[in-house]
Length: 496
Image (cartoon, rainbow, N blue to C red):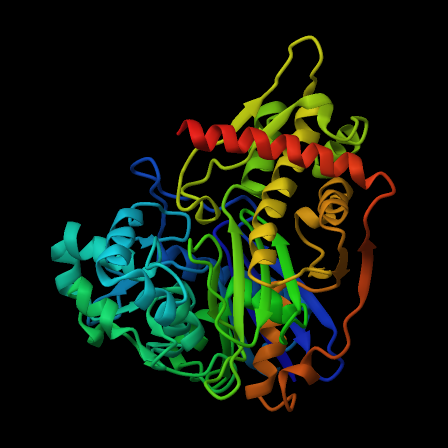
């Protein structure tokens, strides 16, 4: 039995094929090779075409099956991971009505802020664990107010992973975990957040049928099978947003366990067994993939929008993309801790929740023409992203989530020694890099519904630790540099 997992990001779609019996990954592929286009008609807007996602899912399926060299008819489980907080609207024919408003789009910030104040902070925090903020429900309200002709045609609203599952099965469904990431789940009353929908004047009829995150969600239809080159009837047994899925992929399920990732955005995700609330909603709580009303599991999520996208921007700007990341790392390693005073603030990819939805943009501070080189920029960029992680992790500490061990995958910024050692040294924690990716995690989780595993713990029981980062001997130098960076950030925020 083979299992296939998809990871729908904003940069590419990845797919992994896993042998259920051995647990071995047979192939991992992505499509396209270059980053997907993000449509931005105005500053702070970010959209992608849902049908483009589906086209890329089809292409990466063909690619990964050929790479693995397997008989596609032996695939028996499908799992889906997806970029969080996006909004997809479809009409009565299940056709997308407009481009998806994706996670890093900032247009609905004020809509959410006004709802937070009008409904009341106490009710929102108790029921949603957050402000309505710039999440999916507020994006839907924006469409209702600004594109009434589109809203009038909408049969259902979905998250990106729900759309991909719909194209596979022909059925429109969602999960509690997914609804919670859109501010559409009421934790206090364990139901759809009708109080917020009522406030926005949105019909609850737009909410899809709810299915478990891990379990039978539908099967691959004849049409879906024909488009993917797979067999009809395959179980679709798992879907989750990319960050809950990243935690699942790293075997993070129980209270106190912490996962992190450093892709286009950066995330730290810790699991607790009761609602965890930041009154300023700088970090957010969502239902984890194994959450139930009788045994709650809430993922506390810190998100930094301007993470890997900033490092890639610096790379493109200084090398036209012709220098690899390992080469940048080697050059950055020639520079002392603190980058000789050069500081880069990485917040340049939309409103930042960790900054209470401010959008200060990216900043370069203390630049000296006769001192700083390209290599200084590379180190300062890595340090700036690491420091933004630490800034948010201090908020998580204040909420009672003390990070002692952080689990990460082997496919993003954590491959950088500078980046990882900076975090480990300032936070005095251990970072464990595991041989895991989101697409592989989605594939393995689908094996529970397919009957390959009794539960998710069995699916992830054998995981290899590739590398461990610990605090450096000169950790005080990292801590001092962080305090200098934090002063620069405070100055910028106060100036705004």
